[in-house]
Structure formats: C-alpha cells, structure tokens
Image 1 (cartoon, rainbow, N blue to C red):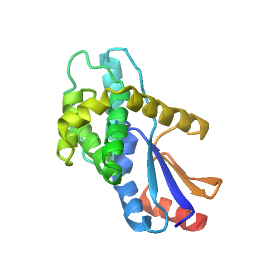
Image 2: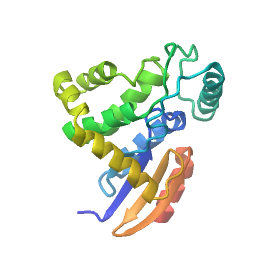
Image 3: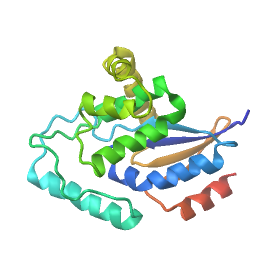
Image 4: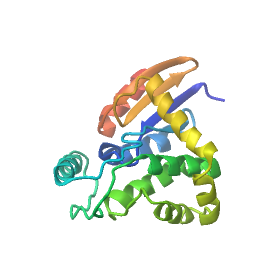
Length: 205
C-alpha cells in the first residue's frame, strides 16, 4: 500500500478546472498505481444567492475565452444560461459528493461530465434533475442519486470538503497537493499544462 496520494481541490463550475480537466485525467491515469488521487470539492461560489446580471455574464464569458485559449478545452460561447440564473456552485459540488458515495472509483469521470454539461452543453447544473440524469449515464439510479443528494449527511460531507479546502490553505482552483505520510506539498495552484505539472511531480517524487 502506497503512502503517497494526490489531493485534488476543484469545483465543477470553475472554468479553469475545466481547462485543467485533460491534465488531471492524465495524471490520474499515469500515476494511479503509485499515487492514487482523491477529489475534494472547493465550493467556489457555494451558497451564492445573487441573480447573475449582464456585467457578471460578460466577466465570466471573458474567463471562458481565456481558458479556451490557454487550454484548448471546448466551450459553448452562446452562453445560454437561463434568465434568473444564480451562480451557486454548491449543488454541483454536492452532486459529486453524492456520486462519490455511490461510486467512488468513477468520481472524476462524473465530475468531468458535470463540467461538460455546463461549459459545452449549457445545461443548468444547479438543478437536481440535470445532475441525476448525468449520474444515470454513469450507471447510478436516478432515484438513489436524488434521495442521497438531498440528505443531511451528504450536505454535511460537502461542507466538510469546503472546510478541508480552507484548512489546507487552498485559495484558488484547481489546486493539486501531494501527500507523503503526514507531509504535504503543493504540486500546482491554478491552471498549468501537463508538461509543467509533470516536472513538479517528478521533482516531488
């Protein structure tokens, strides 16, 4: 059993995390045997209650253009979020925690599916019906997912992830931390290309 582990802090509604998606999947694939990856939810705008206005839409859209240029990840720039949209990332984060409880081995795949639904398909991933349908595509019963999603246990576990993010000093997403026994090291903070992250990982090893 390895004493090394990657801790990945991200939020499915963080555009730079979407840009980083191919990188983190590549890391998980290459290093899984020696260094398993644990996904933790960041809570970028968890609990936000303010309806998005035009200025906020343009601000976020500008970020999407920047992420697309830096990473090559696809975006639907028609930006068809519904009127009255509230950019609350807690439901999407809670959905990933729900999925983890039901199928921990594929949590990163589900995380990416939520990202793709939001950034490419322009689906409202703050809605339980959208999130449960995505879970169903990964073999999870929609009813089982929906029932667990609204439970107090999953709500608490989601907020525990947010708290862990704070305790670890994570102040931006994506953040990748390496753990060896009881020692921790930042691998990357913010978006980086795989070639950059790989060098840091090899130096950490």
